[in-house]
Amino acid sequence: MSQSGNKFIKSMSLINLLPQTIKEELSSKSLLKVISGLNNFEVQSVKLISEAASLGGADLIDIACKPELVERAIEISSLPVCVSSVEPKLFIDSVKAGASLIEIGNYDTFYSQGINFSDKKVLNLTKETRDLLPEIPLSVTVPHTMSIDKQVDLAIKLVEEGVDIIQTEGGVSSNPYSPGIQGFFEKSVPTLAATYAIYKEFEKQSLNIPIMSASGLSEVSCPLAISCGASAVGVGSVVNKLDNLISMIAVVRSLKESLKNSIIREKIS
Image 1 (tube, helix red, strand yellow):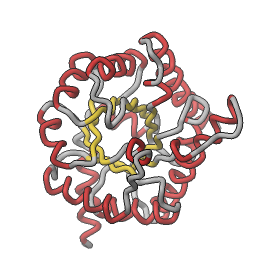
Image 2 (tube, helix red, strand yellow):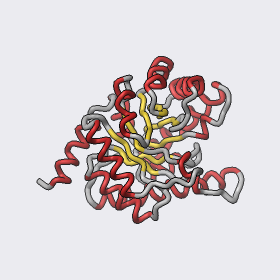
Image 3 (cartoon, helix red, strand yellow):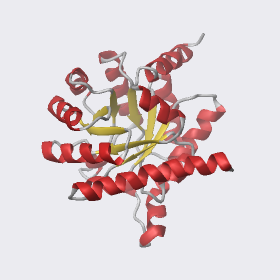
Image 4 (cartoon, one colour):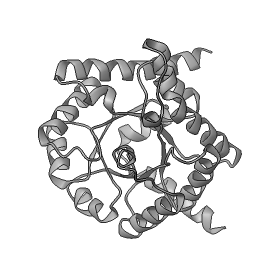
């Protein structure tokens, strides 16, 4: 068997290490991840977002890579915790604190500083992370600053390195010209386009690797992500920009409901 084949089998086994609820939601293509932000180290903010995610029916909370935040999120929420970082060594203590999934990505805050991530940089971070934590499920975000064909190429290389979940992004780069529902569609286009392109290549190569669409998604566009081939969606600002628990819970519930309804419609059709 080829080296990439061996890595693929390893990747599948690590998916099996995820909590049962996560595996079930990935399988049914209805997983909802709420993102608090890679650089959000405010304990109260993370606790509030984690509580809203749990009470609203989300499946996973994605927080900054800090053990204290992992512990607080676990205390306040019943949800599995994913930690995001671009510094592999930081993952170690957060995993010890209880994180179920680690993620290279959520690059949005870096783009505003003029910092971009090349395919070489992402691959090096992936290899370093795998060397440090070879038995922990790993998600990696494909930077939207690359052309679509390069995003697809990078996704394939990441799978060969044993990555378990590929995440797309793009909301920050999108500037909607229209208000309301049309604006929601416009903002989601970059991540949806990347999701579809990567999914079609995975399908062509018979790679059963989950894709998570993230960045710029809303209740309106989450079902479109599933239609484009995603098994999961990640949402951040649509929830964490709110300043009270009740509003956050309501948004999370509507997002999860939109995913459930999209699956029902697919089964009917």
